[in-house]
Length: 249
Image (cartoon, rainbow, N blue to C red):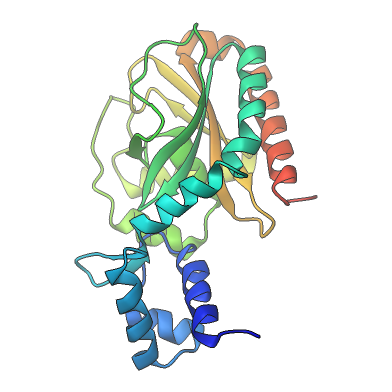
């Protein structure tokens, strides 16, 4: 027997997972077809218990309690567990550090890493967060996400210049994204760290949504010397991981 309120809670979680920048009560109730009063009651309970978070614009998004539960679940079966052997194998072949990241609250969050002894030191570590607009990983998410979601993120970005190559306007970034989506991968050419060149690829789920991104980073000249091989390998890993997660093509 289905418990109606429990089913509605699950639908709210699933719905908000597609909106990393959150939604208002009216947006949630309208899109899910729930009465505003019952939606408010459900959201209030979930908020008080840490399952949702609300920002200053009164937009609800998935909360910290779900992250804790997710970490527990990941010890059994998760994208990290599936991906790690592939990251390690790619690192051994390319001899560069491989990262995997997810998108959280409009920023890139590193969740897995296969470290190469050859790679230059970078301040990207598991759990650290980076801007979405000047990292290869972030630009993968932007290139492949829904237009409305991308516009919402870009319209609220505070473009900070990290290096001389950092894109500092929405227009400049959008030009890059068109090219990246067409070719299937994104590039960070010394845009957040001087001397560091990055190639990133998307990981899709069964609904063709990007749920993670993979990247390989290294000194620019070394990366350019094997760029075609790196791209081919990373796209291969992307396809295999997407396949294992249900994006069977």
